[in-house]
Length: 170
Image 1 (tube, rainbow, N blue to C red):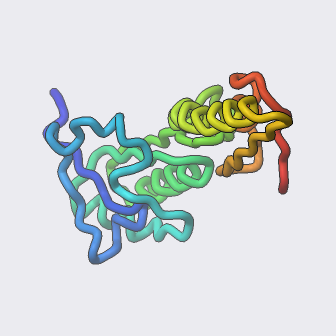
Image 2: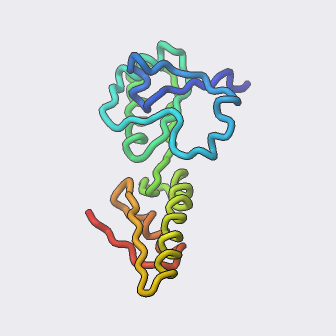
């Protein structure tokens, strides 16, 4: 037993039904060095997924396992897809994989994506700190975007860098 092939779709769940987004088969050559790039090589989409159409394609393509990588919305979509597969009698295991740069997925201690985001943002903060310390009465500013409302990344960065109180704007 093993995996014959790994098929991926472009642009998140929309890749199941967008005409211009043909699925691709991953190969060793295609993913070589992917861990050094960050982000997603396949693109992404947010919300509005047509679950019935996705399940239709899962059945048409003969997929027996689907991994949905994402945050709370992606995991909710994975559940909806699994329920629709069951309702339509399509035999497919659907797995939700928690990924969030802000580590804000309920029940999950640490999402993948969070550590990378913290490491990359840390460079910016440390550079601002060095610049601020090199000038008389220097001030270093760095703006960090948050994916969600939890603020785990700015808090983690403030603690790691030993600097400043993060300011939160909602």
